Length: 118
Length: 118
Image 1 (cartoon, each protein chain N blue to C red):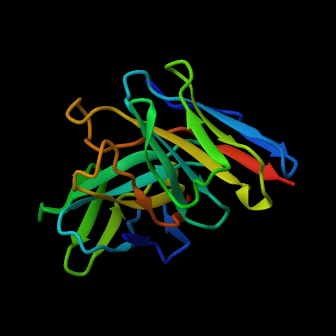
Image 2: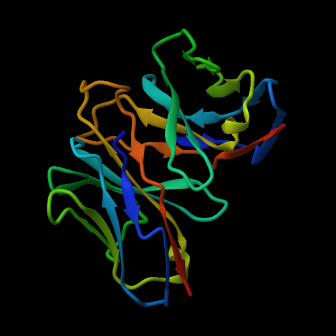
């Protein structure tokens, strides 16, 4: 069964460094998302992406964050200058078009990338 | 803004018994979707069940059912005949039914860790 895959599974970085988290969504999906979960807190929406542009972003998604889909398969989240408070589990998700079968609105998630900022 | 609250951080159930996981939400909208997602250890979140707010009938998927109380804004998940494989973190999530653009994000609760005792 097709899955959303994320790399790396765990990354440790120094504060101020740039980090790129990678995601390969399911191939026929058109809508892409990044969420994050700080340990013990809620899963928080960061950004959604469709048709090669950001559809919606949260207050968390400031100028330090960017997303792109450079080659039609990968979907990346870049954090330009990491801060201690960026330490979290980052989840990528994708979903197919409405009416394409299955449960409408269902998001398919990757296993997450754990980011630790020291 | 919509909020989702899961006030129980952990629950435990004996194998073959029934357990109910609680979720409340707050919204001013009348039409929306509610979801329960399951995240086994080191695995991705997968959809367990979905409820459409305009439907009075509670959704059911095999051993999983919900108790949807729209007036009380409550959406609990009942797991019958609990199995060891049900041990996971369970997230309640909300999605508007309004057309707000190409993507509508999910708003998650903090999650509940369910353990199943053999």
